[in-house]
Length: 262
Ligand code: UDP
Image 1 (cartoon, rainbow, N blue to C red):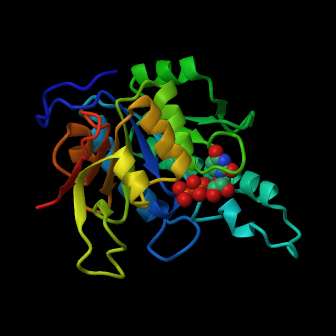
Image 2: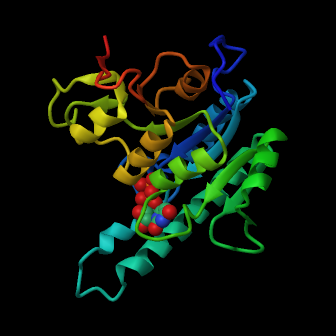
């Protein structure tokens, strides 16, 4: 869609974004399941960003309920890994429905679109229809990931970002951005303000899954990793204000973007 130059509070820098919410953002830290307090809190933050006239498609994860990889290689398990990935995708639908009701309770028109056909629960994901909903000012919640097993909703966020012609993928996390090391293990870990995709891949930085990074890199779709727990950060993210770590293409071949936060 193209980024606008303005980053004033009334004019979002990004006109259309994919917001990736992990399932863990719908629950208190360290817990499982769904906390409607947390769901409503994040819905309110998204509402403020939406009021800036930014079109928002939310890709929701399912890790608060189940991740397919939990069942990887466990030969004694009754549940095969592929089956578990489908269960993980269904978990994202549960989260999407909770999020939808939270949005609607605060007056935001919302559509849940599922990559797995689920008549009576959600609309099927149809690219052109999703764009139409966004243009009409509805928040679109993308459920069931890509509909295919063995990937995560990070890959879904990258794919849908491309399909829906989003300006950026915003990945909401519980940390301030991308660090040189795990900040919980090393308090001296460096927080980066800007990075390029190649540096993320070379340094094996934990940003999104590798398929998602590769997709964004190939198609030059920027990513912003930021802390959604800090009130107002979603608004800052869509307004293009300084927050989190932005990952984008190298401007010149051979040049490395690796800027530390000050
Ligand atoms: N999943 C999948 N295909 C997809 C998206 C998700 O198989 O396109 C499964 C996968 O097992 C994943 C789970 O659904 O672990 C839940 O999604 P994710 O791990 O991305 O949730 P998050 O960590 O963001 O809460």
